[in-house]
Length: 530
Image (cartoon, rainbow, N blue to C red):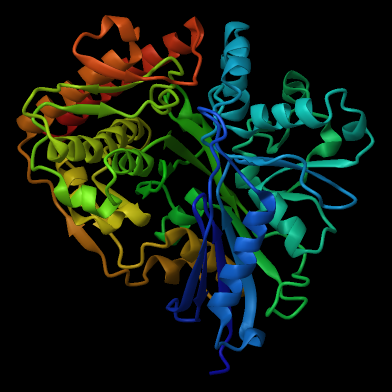
């Protein structure tokens, strides 16, 4: 009963979760606190910084109810990435909202930078394509709104940060302005190879260096906790990871070769690579997974709308999400839903793409629409995984995590769509578990060798669909994607939804090359498999 415990806090888009983990790696207690997302205009997505902090306090208090808080030896933190906020250094008062990672209000500014030909240089420096998803454009919007002449920023009165920065500021009582390296790599302001802020990009986005946090390793040092009941003051924060990075760590992936897929509001597909040179020519993003003494590089593809697609359709039909999924037909009967509500991210990176529902007939009903929504998740993920094949070798198995993995039918659909094994661990809260594991490593409670060997109680889904049928399905999906990426008026027989994304010729050319690369990789994968 006196053994030390680790407290993991996973601050996500729709909820904050807390897990209490013991020295064997078992989850002793868990709790969550829900969060609202505000959409004040089409394409905008924002949250309250104070609500995010309150959700952390609520989740921690619930998780520790009935436990001895003095047994908590340390804290691991994981967080939603790319979301950005601005606050006053002296008071800690947020200025404006937290602009969410899925927010598209900066699409026009992004289009201007693309038209100026900056995409190649930005990607070469940061590993990321110019896109409103990343933090830099959000940071510029916040400063333009609340400090347009940058007077307060240059005086050092304002702090710009991602969600990990905000939580570290609040956890430590407002003493230090910090950002973990993996989160910094998602801001589009970091030179991913030098692992430091890039002065040229700060000029491009109009961000004074004095507003930015100091970059730290994933294992700190971080400020100790103050005024977070019922935790004792001085409880150390031992690890900080972006949620997708933490999930990879939670799967026990410490060397290149395995790929994890996180199914959430959006989706992240990530795999480690030996070094940044392996990202050359890939349509995916080069990023830093973590730095626990040694920087670990990864390739990642981000999908803007996966679980959000199911949620949108369920709301449109006035059904619950689980109810909608349960109604899904065994076949979509040729119906495709391309969820480009704000353009398409990896591997297309096409801000011009518009949401599209195609293949409708008088026989189409809710079951076919539900099936098309689920298929859109599996198809998008397979397109990203195909982009990883060239850098990591043929990916034979996907490690799945996130809330949507509770849907066994979706997991089987993913295996059938990808022609790859899908492994689903018993514990799906891999982001929280991953940061707890890293905290345990920092404390000496775990080693990576031990973590890699932990039993995870995996459920395995094997492909059942014949290869020729799978390839026909992928081909039909790519035809629907092509329609979504064309002028909406030239796509007969389809319904389109407006996109807040604004594309340009350079962006569209990049997206076209990405499509060719994905289709080529699908063909190469078939040859390698044979």
